[in-house]
Image (cartoon, rainbow over all chains, first blue to last red; front, side, top):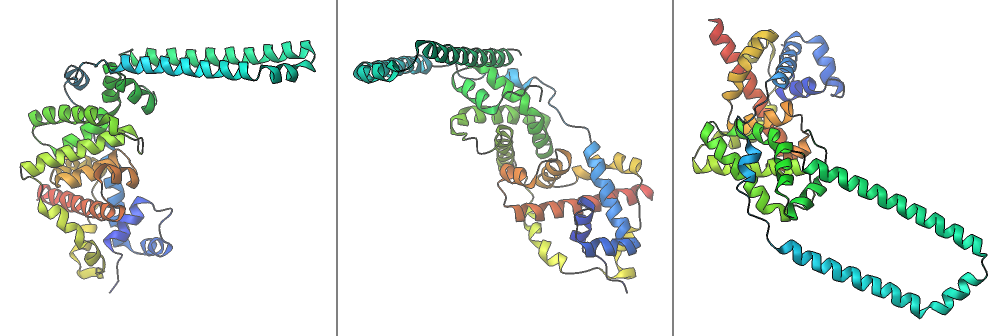
Length: 148
Length: 199
């Protein structure tokens, strides 16, 4: 009497025959019954993949969106907080520059003016390029959000 | 999934009050949600209510979403749990579907023996692709709602064990045993239908 593979082993082979255990593959190679059972499973898996996908026969997005609560005034208070933060941050930078102005003057004294201009031009160019890139990406994403 | 806006941008936009962004999330994820709802809920009217309920729940819980999974997986988890609650309320979850999974280990201790096994008689039947495609839908319909959903998520949607585990909140071992049982039941259903039609 032949000892056949376990149901689980046959499923394992049918799911991934390349990476399954060698003893399973060896048995399948010589056992007609197990091979046929594995083939049935493989066929079953491929037919499931071809089953038509379900979809709702109504516009779910519209139905849901019209039930959503209207936006509250939280965003305006968030904006005020953001402006306060930006103002404080700019103030802190200005304070630091003012406080260390003598050190900053000394730092740049030994450098040729042309080098300073060059550094400024490079820094400003990079900054402009970055800002344009961020703004372009933001516009694209906002356009996608409002496109439907 | 027509639009590839990152989940984070969509979520931030929704939290800022952009309802259109939530509409976009629905469009991106409704195919997966439909698969779960159709497999777990048989009544068409209930499907309509439940699908809306799923997205309203997702909207209300959105602040709690921590990006530990994909947004679609998180919404699919809400869909699965909402359908499960519905089935429990209607007492439609078959107890067998959960307890049978424990038979997995016991069953696999027994190896079938050659010519005397009924399984081998079944195995000798090789169903043609065309015949199988025509009976597959009925065979899947005969499964329990949970088995149907797991088969669909794994074999149709081709989600990983990890993703299905996140949706169903089942540990990987339990999930594998459920899937094993589901595939076996599906094969038995196919053979039963095939034999019935053949008579």
